[in-house]
Length: 468
Image (cartoon, rainbow, N blue to C red; front, side, top):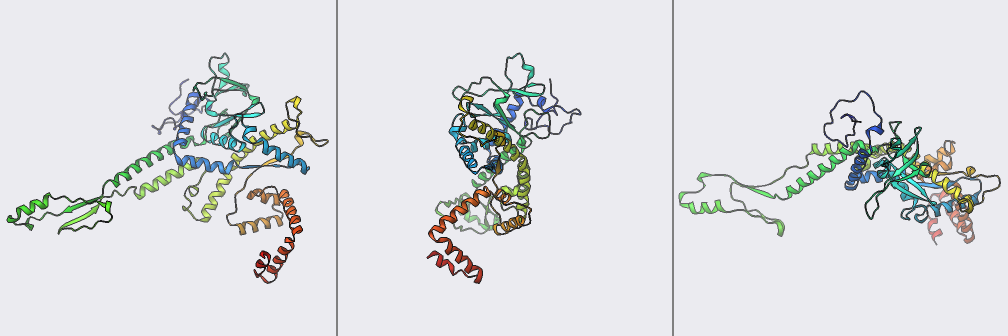
């Protein structure tokens, strides 16, 4: 089936961007065949590999979208502690990664990076661990009778994915071999946008790959031009004056005309002793011009918008506090969908581990946990909480948060979630434990007395007493 010129991605065809549009929409699965998807993914990975701007943009997005904390929420405090300890153990590299290279934090960050660059990534369950497969290696098998059922590396039956095929390259030989796995053993990590009929979504930066490449090439050209300017130093200009010399001074005139001015700055600043009518000028190209810098800034802004990043996050001195705050709030809203996709992945992993902990060894589990009477694995409550950011203005934001709690608009747990302060009940239990320990050594009374002194007279005289 041939594709019209308009049925394509500009990242695959950077020229001839002005063209007529087809009147009939086409499915993305037909527009993006295996070979074309490979070309897009290779293009994105190449830009990410060689351009610091895109690499930074990906890292910054991961910092906001991939940092989650596991919080058991059962009514049994002892069970919560056991769940947290087991999750901490089983998310280490030796337990979670089939190859023992990455822990869960690394795996979920790389999965998000692959989703941004290649469109999706895959987790294959193998013997109690997870094997991560890049989306670039998911493709249709070859030489099969059911070839017509395969689209983008997925076997479809009634519109549902029943199996996936991976053709990973052997790192020793570079050769690839088809590997078909049932869909029940594979988790596809992706985020669907714009088109509902996509089996494998397209990376969000595809629309900006040309801008990133153009920026990279422009920076190289401008850098070369700036270096070229450094090769030229100064120029001497002499004004012609026919009456400056008499006929008897022909020899002196010839000597002056033949002399060349050579200035070496290797020994530091130079002093020029110029003759009358001479001048010295530096050779400058005024590169880059102000208009060029403004245009490059606009191009950078457009490229970063493909990841919902504001220019103020790239250039911290671009705007004031209010502008930065508004840009950050907008980016936080844009991260909601990505965090939801991450949370779904975390929930799958956590439920998978829970069943292993509760099942007895003869059924394929570890049998490390015994549920309380009347509780089933589905009754075990937990959540993955995205870690909040530190306060911008601690005193003002903390005061606002506490007022919201007093007004019944938030809970203390909401405040802890917003600012990444952990589980509120765990914090209270830890504080109570510390107070008991301080009472044993008599420090608590001293600190209470010091606080009362400050409240009554506002002085800081109690500091020396407590320190002593």
